[in-house]
Structure formats: structure tokens, C-alpha cells
Image 1 (tube, rainbow, N blue to C red):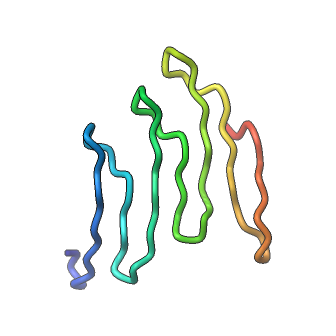
Image 2 (tube, rainbow, N blue to C red):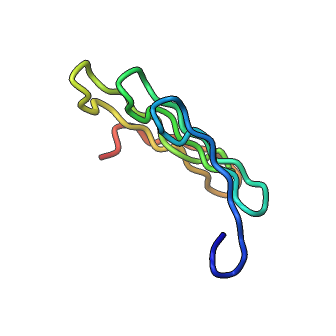
Image 3 (cartoon, helix red, strand yellow):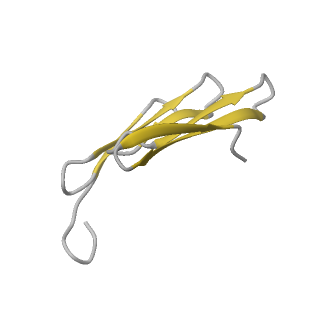
Length: 80
């Protein structure tokens, strides 16, 4: 609970990574991880976020930003 009395809830996976969080308004954000613990898909309540790909050494090899402009979803690839 914050100073204004707002609460949020979260759920973690077996490795302790947050996989879901719900804010005081009930808005859900999610994160998916690969076997190496790297965040590969993240989405906010508006389905805006990013997708990442990692190599076997855990280095990010690509990143795509998913965003919304005037109600239309768009993707920008290889964002750094």
C-alpha cells in the first residue's frame, strides 16, 4: 500500500520474477521469461510493451517495441 492507500498485487514465478501485476484499478501487466530468466514479452494493461530475443549467452539480439498511436497498434523492430 502506498501513502495514498493504493494497493497492487503481483504474482511471481519459481525464480522470483514478477509475471503478473495488478494495480489498484484492476489493470493487468504481464511479463514472460525464457529459460535463462530473460524477459522476452512484456505488456502493460493497454497491450503495449516489448518483445525481446536473447542468444544462448543471454545477450539481447533483437527488441521490438509494441505501441499504440490513435488507437492503432504498431511495432518498431530492433529498438535499442
